[in-house]
Image 1 (tube, rainbow, N blue to C red):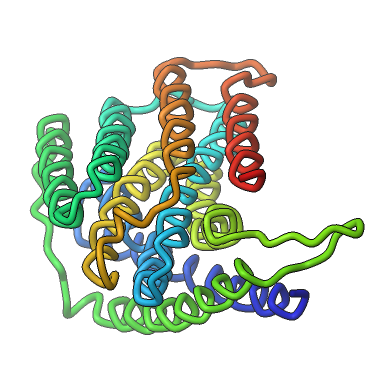
Image 2 (cartoon, rainbow, N blue to C red):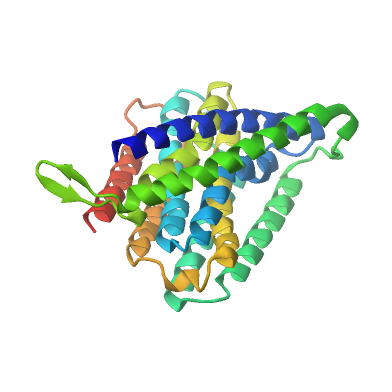
Length: 320
């Protein structure tokens, strides 16, 4: 088990560095091409920082480990809410009030995760198609929302002649993350079933716990790095858009992964996934409730509640 953990740390380190550099490259492309900041965070940065989740989810689906897929995706969404706690603490002395676009993005995260819960209850074979169309629906209305609130009419363009080096770097880093994600999934799958001893007792972590703790945190590290960096340079709305966009895209990944799963993935998930979904609702509700307030206090009750419910979710999954 200790050797597996060492492999986990090495691959995680590679993925984190590559993910961060990939995000910086994607942010440069987004800025140069002239897209709105909310859309850059919601679509470009969110999809880039969620690339590790995509790779690991597809790998887990191919080896028919539904709990690892759901644990990774739902766990990543919950960990993203913990990232908001760090954003809140760092941004408490700055202009904390978020734009209305990010309140919309947070609400859409609740919508698509709730839809996932319904599809799990129904054990739907068409869940993948429904989630993919829902993601397109959300992105379309987010674009309309951004366009409506942005008076500047700057025509976006790919600018291939100017940015070709940036595109090549982006592709190279993507390959590194894909390879790392594949091996990380294999290591986590073995960690989930390998017994270990503690205080004379033997434990087996299980796929759901490994997915929600080790795999979810590792694949969410790019979001954490990017969000904290965004706050440091005064782009708190970019941090929110990145995190909320990642939440939505992670559920889209569930839909994509279901096409690679040998059978009905939504019929083979553990019932503990529902507990995590409800915890996610609580976390986003706390965030939405505090998004529009400028709080200058050093003690942040909202950040503390986010941490408490995050730990509660981990404890419940481990005890199961």
